[in-house]
Length: 130
Image (tube, rainbow, N blue to C red; front, side):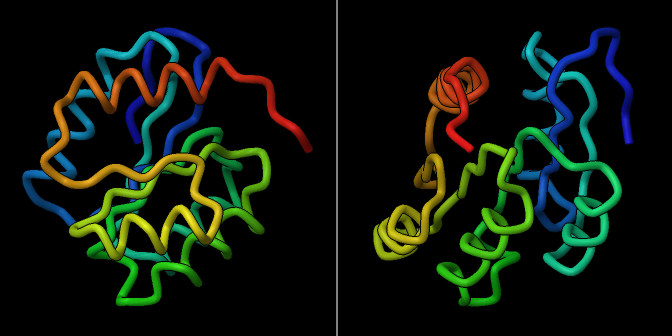
């Protein structure tokens, strides 16, 4: 877990170790609204981390969903109702499944970094309906 110098959003990145997760981590440190960044390698680890820390923002990589995208997104929204959930999809079918399951945003991998930043800023600034 990496503490940032402000009191921004607690963010959980759920992605396997590698260049995607490293890139997300680096990008998140540049967003002023992000305070603490934590990582989970897989969905079970994410559930455990979320019970302890109650994230404000969750970024889910489709490669951790084990083909159960709709179930993963629905469970994430049920466990973390206060959290904004961004799903990173490999293809259009995953993108549609994530949106149908209630992801706050779904992006097709290969998106420009600026689109992810704009999505995060938008989600963190909109009022939450509980």
